[in-house]
Image (cartoon, one colour):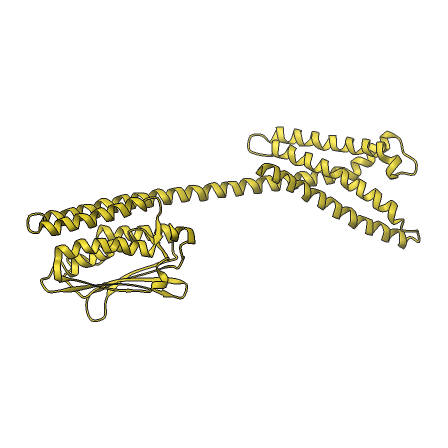
Length: 360
């Protein structure tokens, strides 16, 4: 179906071009006749120029086909030159025969000359035009090949990026699962009920991960729901030492964010700023709009860090995923928070999830 539409579009373009060419020549011929003191003969001139131009329509399509079939390319120059020269010679002969056959109706000649003279006139009138069409056909063929190569390169790049993202996600999930299971193992003998609640939250997290495994981006509301399950696990383990403060703009709940974006950031903050101390510690999660960007922040109020911020698997993984998804169109910054602690700031392009995905 697409091939039929392309052929029809090509036919219409070629027909339109030669019709416009004929109309231009009608005006020029009529103007030259008037300048020479002759009657413009609009009807005769229009008939002759349209007939001459429309004869070029099938010829143009034929030459385009020949060039597509036998283009100049490495190792095949001789075959291409022979095929195209033969096609041009055939065009010259066919144009001469068309003039002889149609002259009685069209009136190019008042008295039809001998065949030899018509052939010579056909060479003079059609040789250059035929090779010009061959040149244009080569330009179209090479442009189409360049577009196809560019499209294939983009598809390959997209596949490679997708494969890398899948690999990064596959690396992140076992890392999180290992940490969660360690937390549950610590609670089994000390607080069986707490361990049971942790398993419920872990099951919900795994179900969320499986439901979203085919998509690299999900709605912010779904990411926050998954994060809430993770925080539920950590609250059972750490008790009152973990305090979480949420500051979420409700108009951004349908904004698109990478799956499992916030969990490693919060995990890093809890591990370094809360789990290492005996007094309560606070982790803050904030989402707001900043013009055409989505601003996400995860911060803590202090703690002891044995490694520089961003050195762990979770944060390094997050950096790579953001680079694959957004290229240079994002910001990922880690720094000290005013008043103590660490703040992770993310700036992403603000894209809202389609209505169908939100409903789902």
